[in-house]
Length: 355
Length: 102
Image 1 (cartoon, rainbow over the protein chains, first blue to last red):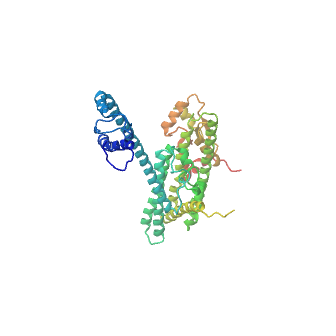
Image 2: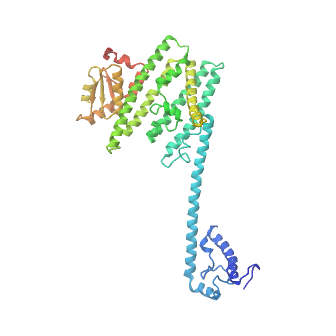
Image 3: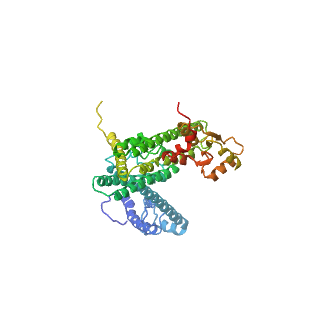
């Protein structure tokens, strides 16, 4: 018997360990053949069935049986056994590759989720340490039932807020400095375009998941509390917030603003009642098990889209005010929402008194 | 369509609605708030409902209802009515049909 190492005590173990050296070379063969995949089925305490690549000097794990010549004989007499062994190897290798592929795909998905999380945190830092409101509700912030369109919307919204914060800072700096009405007008224009961009984003997302938009899931909790019909704010309420910033107003302007406030209130009232009716009808049809009949869900979507008419109040204000007043108004509006978001954050992280 | 022409040129504020339409309801609430009594034509149960819908769409109301006519002229659907109101232009249109507050 060949001795490859001296620290094996029993001859029996000899028989087992020696073949392992051959198995080592078998590994190499296997790697060469299968592209480096581990094939555990080939690393077994040797039995009668062995690939031809083994040297003939092998001894076998079963003691006392002279397999050497048997093996040679077996090889030539049972080529199908070898073929079967090879096929098993290939199969095992293939399964291994598939497992590896699945694992890599899982890694990729997790990586994307991680990137989104980091972006969310970045956005949160901008807003004053508020950690995204969806992170604590789900393990990774997403569940499988969030469509990719909604995920895309949330990411876009994050960017929108960043840009919004930037514009607010710019407005603030500019208003306290010396700036021509024309330059200010440009800033105001951009701010308005920015708002309209958000409306478009929301309208598109509403088509994907109207309930998501109507319940304001992407907003901070404080914003959601004040939210009206998925639109973000009650224009008439907002007018109250903004009014002090428009001073001084001419008499005509004051009259126009009052009229606008009243029209807003009436329009809001009508739309709210319409929405209530829709909720009732929808609830009724759910109760009756007739969901989807009629066109209630599309109606909700249209109702939401119609809110753009109301939110075009921002446009109306623009018409009434001078550029400078509009700039101040937009700044006040932006800061109002910043404060709401900060309120959400500080409220959520407040030190709780021991009770 | 004749029917639509006839009904829309009735005096005052005329609104085509459907009983299931919540935006129609919203528009009606608005006019009520403005102290106007519009003439409501609920077209669900009209035998010519499809024809009427098509006619209203052709006139420019994407969802057919609500369709608002004032003094025989088409004002539009929810969007148009709300926008007009916000810009202050709706009240002058309906002034002749407003009832006095009690």
